[in-house]
Length: 299
Image (cartoon, rainbow, N blue to C red):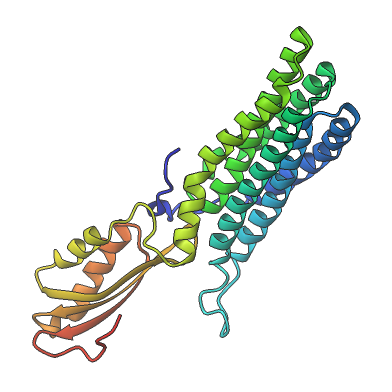
């Protein structure tokens, strides 16, 4: 899975994402109800785990849609950056939801392995096959924007992971129909859990990194320092901080030492353009004259 590059922040998700979110929420919520009923009726851990994960998808989509809308709210005197950070929080919550879903699947699968139960393969296949179509269709709608916003990527991964879950359930149902081996149902559940963990790990790691104001993925601290130092009038740089305002926008603050303070405005315009090209739109630059000690000694 490719890591998210925040340098793509200039391409904002289109407003049509609102409709995509609503569509995904409605069809997934409807399918969750059907799948839970079928899972209980036919005692299939595959269907129940699929339904549980589908429910986490509904929650994920609701949160992602909320964060998407909050990110458009203008800044206020209390929230001077607006609610942009909500997108980071939601991407972290979505990653955690996926991990909780994995724990549920593993526990249910182990219980079924210890105490095997007969499973109706035909019901499992047909129900899960519908899930493959629904989740794959929803994921497809997010493909265009998944690499532009970590929050959208989280929603996309939920859909892809759940489509894989449904495929696994279909496979287990076919095997049960052909061989009568019901134990394949929890075994497939464990395989599905491993796939979800693998696909979610980068999302969890990156969203956690952004939530504690780590340097965003795709931006290298030393590279940014070199970009600033490339200006001939820059003698030194300190107190350099880089973090994410949201899952699509990055910020920077820095103290820059100049050889000629009279060239400050020219240097500022040049550096800001270089930073924009590197994926940082929000730059706060403080200029100092060479030989003058910086008053702010701490980071």
